View (cartoon, rainbow, N blue to C red):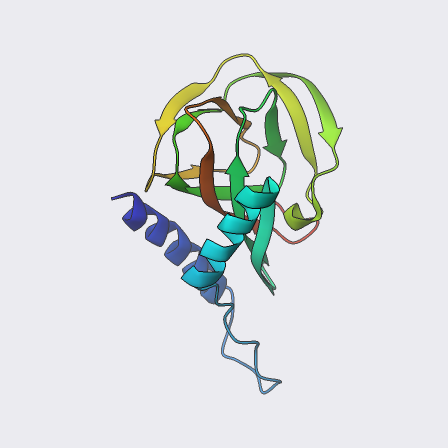
Length: 175
């Protein structure tokens, strides 16, 4: 069911991308699709765990409607503050581990944060999240965190690893 939701979200994004175009003009051929194979995901996950790397990008595609990034995240501790991205939507696909993800709700004490370069130039903030919706997550779960939604892992049952898909609107445009 969750994989079907992920497929629907990604298909909707692709259809939206296609619907903004008119008939292709005669011009240079577009770039090929970006392929990230399971072997690369597995190797990146092993490397992230061995080196205690929190977030590592494994793919990127850019187009007229924005940028899509794919990364591997391996967390060993819960997050002390929520993170909120103004123009970046994220989709998490849990691979290993479990925990509680807190999303939405009122934010206070928001401060700009310089994110790692794999997030891109979107403006992001660390905030204190005073309420929200807590959801227990486990392997095979898929979570969509829309742009502007604060989020944090408020509790981990041990290390958690997930693939993260990031969709960023072009600079100056909202999603």
